[in-house]
Length: 137
Length: 56
Image (cartoon, rainbow over all chains, first blue to last red):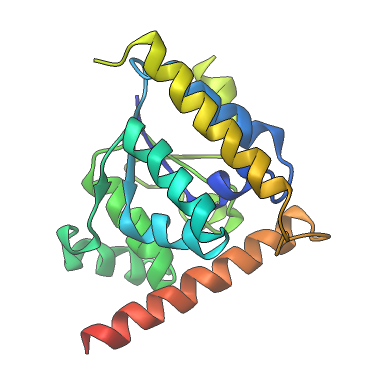
């Protein structure tokens, strides 16, 4: 199962706001690496960076580097992002949706209700960490 | 190929990160989940605007 995990799930997973499902999902991905492929774009990494000290960010990068490689934003076709903007997504959300489609992910895991309510006809599932855990366990 | 040792190493790093974060100033302290999501979205928009401005 190929997953894109949004910045809010990582941030809640650290415990900045305690949402146990977010922490448990990260553990699940770490422990069952054979079952899940994680993808992450530079934008999400930068968003996480904003909420961490430089030292903690360095540790975060070490975790990510053991799980996947970071995709640079410029790889994602502009037209794909524009498609989502035309559907009412804000530019940054449109990029995340475009990225999720571009990598062919099965699901975008996010706690962002704007994603959850925005569009029922996406080429990937949009799941909260809790729903994702229920689906995969 | 990831070994059991790799999994333990990654979990240890993740736990270290969580532990370190818990001891520092929390910019989202006292916020509800929804408030925190809005705050994270503001950062997302801000970073995105910067990125676009740099490309112009």
